[in-house]
Length: 182
Image (cartoon, rainbow, N blue to C red; front, side, top):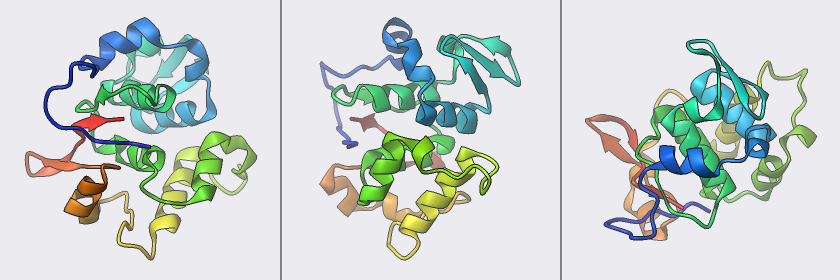
């Protein structure tokens, strides 16, 4: 579950890049869901737990991933910690929604726990397309309707904030900003 907190928090991890560098485990990087997040957010391919092929920087270690994807990896792998998620941009929104439990759907939880058991590779060219379709279809007839083109205003509404499950805020008139994620 994703919770949002406001204000100073002594136990919060403000510098996710430094924290990630010191605690990440190579096994995290090779998890199917994490590999897909890296491909989608950074357009990079995981070769193994210590090497990622970036179209911009070539072969890089996990510590050279973007701040957004490092924060997503931390949120997914250390659910009891509180992370500053301000490094997460628009390209992280789908993943924050999926791992946040905002979409109350047991099938989504099951798929996220073991994606390879549920995704038919002949049907989708990438897992990114599969997860986009999954989120789109699961929210299609709800007030949380997801679109990759534009963030649904429902994610900015007070009722989501009050439930403390998920909160996105506009940044500079466009895009998203997540203040704290847990």
